[in-house]
Image 1 (cartoon, rainbow, N blue to C red):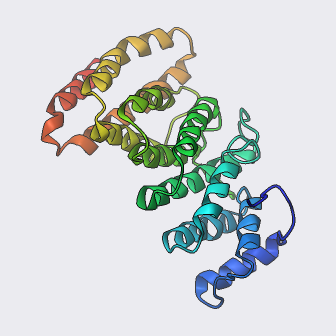
Image 2: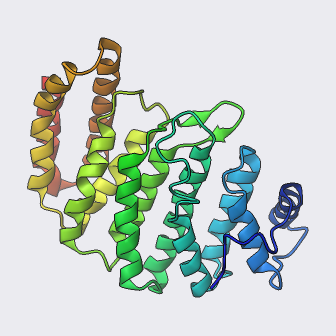
Image 3: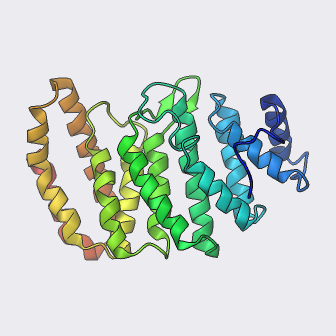
Length: 284
């Protein structure tokens, strides 16, 4: 088992960046002998405010290493466990406007990559997948920093990233239809936020796992029930927030409904759902 909390084998940030730049450009091969130290170093700096290091080098390298079978199943299992920890997915949870969001948001993407790989190779035990489900639900319920693109520091995108993780989780063969009812409410609740307006494609990314639920067998009635309740829910919340925040809420709701409508527009089996979205939009 890899101890990701140990600083043993961890490189300096500038050393890691230089190595990953050379690896990405093809000037250096992946260092198989020191690959555990490289992975530990990448996780150590995955919350860096250097957007090139965090996004274009660390995350993209993780993705390609996993897809190309360069990371062993045991290492990916240890990596999943660490990514779900208080040091990573829950680092600074509850904060808003601080740099800890980068660690949380990019931990979500690492989790998504590992789940994607498990969907291909089926190496994670069922308990690990269900632990992931429970902690992702806990995380999305607790995440307050909804920023998308942060000037100078690049993408945070916490909600879009966790939506990607949920999408891979829903596709997992170990997840059953009954489990979808645990995931739908927290995802739906994060659509109906009034603190700010999603302006970086979060509506489209949130629609993807909800559509995946329908494809997995979620009863259409569950979504239709939520849709029918939106006008009354917005009216109720209008009494609880100031005017500007209410318009944030309505904008987020409308943007999601429109994105969801487009995603299902070519699906003949979802005609009734399209009609419910049309009716809901007409009432807002």
